[in-house]
Image (cartoon, rainbow, N blue to C red; front, side, top):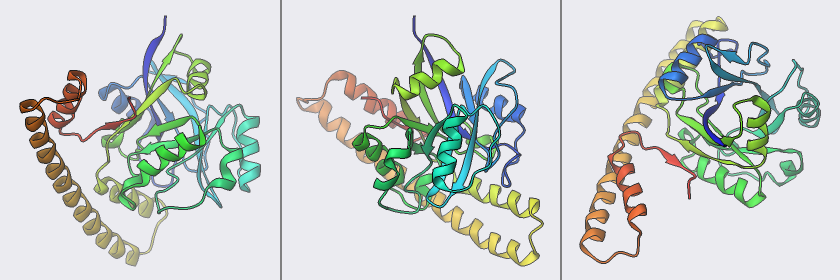
Length: 284
């Protein structure tokens, strides 16, 4: 009998240069959000710790910086050194992993066609990706569909409040890493996500400044970045409020008139309106 698992497939620990969470803190935050597992994907550092912590599944992963953007390696079973794109893809595959392009449109639209043959998946939802380019996640999801590629989803969390903001729901026969890997490759699941506060990005940048012993003038630039992030959060809150009010008006109109929408569809729209989280998903 199949079971349903919820998995945040992109989380950073203190092993990342801009991360501050211990594995135990990640697990506690994920449990508080109702997750069944997380993938720890630190910058250029493969997670080699236990795959079960306090009863929660921990998927070993990594996020490599390459000449074509950030590349996730999920289910890798050994440390590795990344070099070129091709060699890094080969190393991930040799370590038993799945190679998925992370937040592919975070900085805007680009042509990814040459990368398609190397990839096992595409990150269709990243809770930080829309900050620079509001259509980043929409484009990533559509690209995965167009390429007929499996997709992943994750929060890209660097602080506890972000954990669980993006996740996959997968259906497996047993709660094991091989079963989860097979389910993702077979596209037996869907993604859910909400955008993280831009101020959390500022917090992780502050962590980076401290860890790298940055000069004082860099903190001045960081202060300006905080104000920019605050402005983005205010704008996002306002946009969500406008969208919900419009949706509420449409719902009332549909309820008064004979609607072609099924009751199930109407109920789903109402649940989204009632949510203060602005969560999106890939459910049909």
